[in-house]
Length: 359
Image (cartoon, rainbow, N blue to C red):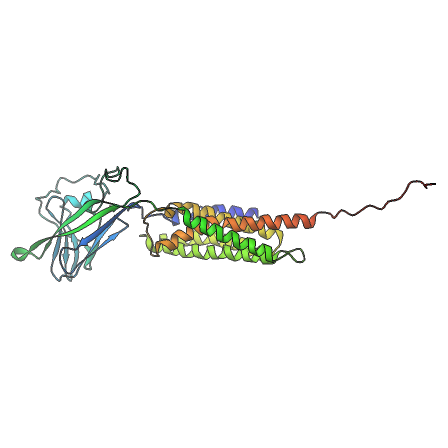
């Protein structure tokens, strides 16, 4: 048992890095949306809540994204790819979320464009300060009404379609919304109640046999296994939803799944219904709570986060990781009481023997 717990400490610390509440370059409380693309054939997508905007050019004409001082910043050239102008101040300002970046002296609004290729397709994403809330403080409209959704920024990204005398100026429009937190407790309360009721019902209808409480152990183990499977799916989702390299993704998967492997090993010890199996189940459940519930607790109330799954799936998986300790601890408590009573010596009436005859 000591070895298993030590292994869990080593393997379990890593999922904290593997699981993220949100994309670290985006926001959990702001959501940007492009509502007017500017022209037919322009397709927009916002990445990470408000972390980046992505434009796909299907107009079959050259499209230029205009920088913050009216200079050409990006060029989408049909059949040739996407180019960025290093002479544009926007090239450097967009490197930092709040524009806190140095601008070279040669990068000015009047500088001659110098184009460098960024992609060989008709799609490209970039951070744009016109598409998120720039201040570090909450918007004034939010103060005093934090339980409501608010529009805090009107997005306007100027574009030029075509080149020369036939070029036309258009603007992509949208909005940035401030999102209130969600109530974190409903899935916790519901799952804790369901898990506890199941264990109580099993304990009431199945009794131990031959010194083992096998039905109680196995049903509790099945609950733990379901939570393990859900977290394995969540680990895959973390890798898919985050912008990670192949090597980083492999490391994240190996470390996270190794931790789950330790939990699985502990869970299998409970299958026989022996007393030690219930303690192993408790340790497995505690690991799930700490490493797969506690490290992602922000997602229970976050209005948005990076995921390829429906958000409710991740919320309920995290809630299950928290509440799986309820059935495991209850089963260990009930089994411990029964085994303690079964192991106690049975008191028998003593034999009365008079020390002397009564006359």
